[in-house]
Image (cartoon, rainbow, N blue to C red; front, side, top):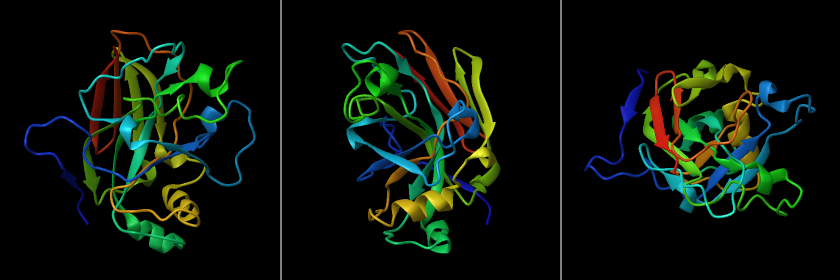
Length: 218
């Protein structure tokens, strides 16, 4: 069916275009991001709290004591129906639409010398999950060009066809243990290399057919 753009917030408010019960991220899901590490046999999942969500145009805020905050441009899946133990076909049917996301991460808290036991700070701080600008439905998300720019310069560029585990596989795998609810979000992974952001930077994540998610850094 023809794809269409759905803007959930239409009254001028800022904010992300949906209200999830949970955010799931996928790590190491582009070959170009693995850096010689072994391909994961199954999707490597982690949580980001809903409180980390911000919308298009809102500021990514570097939190106190953070020293190595990176961008991660990603395709994000929006779940449209409750799903549990989904087959591949059921997983496809459960994906309502897609949007742009940025899985902001502090590498020091994630994997530095004094890293946390869990990624609760590294990937879960307030403002660490930019999302938007809109949810697009009916789009073939299997081969879209993703590009991340920092201050207008291209930092990442890759097609979603390079995902190690594709979108239906991720949904099916996650739903074996966690019931996915309408509005839940899955950040599907980031390609290539990333680097630290500084106050004053502007990060743009553009995905073919969806639009541009733009967030300043403060």
